[in-house]
Length: 205
Ligand SMILES: Cc1cc2nc3c(=O)[nH]c(=O)nc-3n(C[C@H](O)[C@H](O)[C@H](O)COP(=O)(O)O)c2cc1C
Image (cartoon, rainbow, N blue to C red; front, side, top):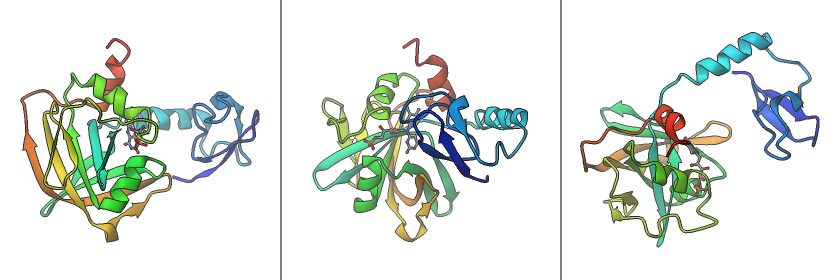
């Protein structure tokens, strides 16, 4: 994808990407407020179809956690998958600005608690506010895995990883961390939560 600058005509904020953002993160103006020097790189209709097709890529939903000394933190993540089976490795995409990013970078470990379809409360708690503002794990039932990372006991299972620092990729806004799987377990038979299921049901829960 080819990135370009999109300038908000209301407040001057500049976003980088193939498409303008849905909303200006600074003044909340809608997509139409964004102007760019070159216009859409594809015809407007095709761009809309590309956005729609991106929305059809499927994902699971996970609570990705890490540690920094005695401190615990975690966030919700859909960009996590098993990238190789031999050796068994996970890849995860984490925004540079997240506290979880800071913790994974410094400790070199992370855990992914595999959420079930009933874990809407966990998504709301871990997915919308930073651990810089409050202790997200306070009152949440956890166990500590082999890496020391907190694991949500209500999950349907978990995997723990040791990060291969030399393989971390800067993907722009996000880092892609790749880790060797060093532990894991299954807690229940529940259906895993998917990104699509979350979006279809979040308002009703
Ligand atoms: C459904 C959903 C999926 C998300 N997926 C990701 C993701 O794949 N990568 C990411 O960096 N943030 C993702 N987030 C956003 C983070 O969970 C959110 O920014 C979080 O507040 C970061 O917390 P932290 O600063 O405590 O680490 C997602 C949020 C939601 C609700």
